[in-house]
Image 1 (cartoon, rainbow, N blue to C red):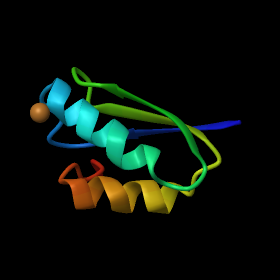
Image 2: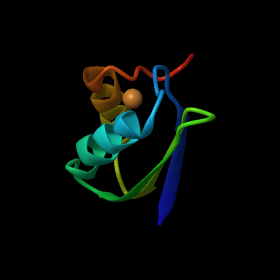
Image 3: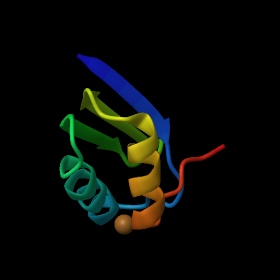
Image 4: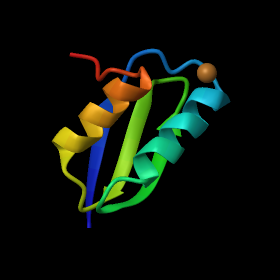
Length: 66
Ligand SMILES: [Cu+2]
């Protein structure tokens, strides 16, 4: 199983973390989602498409940091 780790902007609180977990969990191939609010890190386990994860994060208002 692969793990994708990304840094996203605008993650400020537990509510953001829940929204991200919920939003990404619905994507194909996503097994589990971890969000670290302090560092803005999103960790996705499974066989998901990284581009789909980035697109979903942007849609949710948490664009991936360049
Ligand atoms: Cu928040």
